[in-house]
Length: 218
Image 1 (cartoon, rainbow, N blue to C red):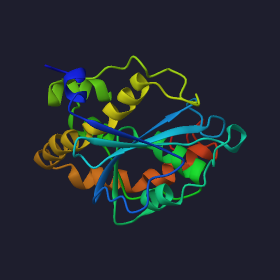
Image 2 (image 1 turned 90 degrees about the vertical axis):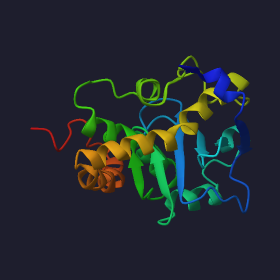
Image 3 (image 1 turned 135 degrees about the vertical axis):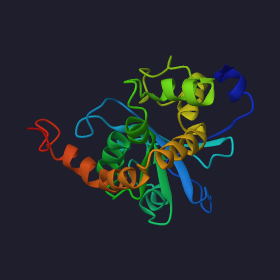
Image 4 (image 1 turned 180 degrees about the vertical axis):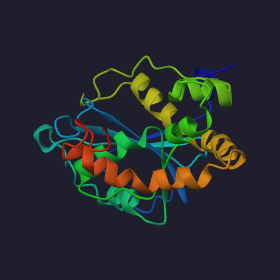
């Protein structure tokens, strides 16, 4: 089992305030995750968006609201990437991240792939579909979740917070490769793709209040 600290020693982290730098190319498939002040996109603000091209580097954009001297949703490069129909956004539990990004940035995030949905479609022998569980069981990597509930709205993020945030995207390409192979083996890749295509609408429904009660529930 590889400890995350060993992996992070070989990773490169880039923190950008307000927006991605001009001209940055993260390739056709970019791993994406978010850190927020809470779990309700209508109430809790987006604080950090972390991305990786699967090359051992993580680019993180800190979203600072105008009240704290920042630019808020004025991040044209990040918006362009998240809305680019030619770039797949690879996420874990994409339903939340898509809803948060769409609400905070005022864009439609697509196309999307979700490793959690993929895991639920092929790993029906277990109910353990969290990123930590999947990385440990499929990749042999032990992620730390110590900073999961820290204050992501702080003006200055700690090195521990940044390492945690980066770890959530640095493994997604490898994880998707394993899960995609399982989806193909079990004949469920087409079904997964149909689920992924619905995620932008699912995120919008959540933000509009149709998460509770869920209109797809009985």
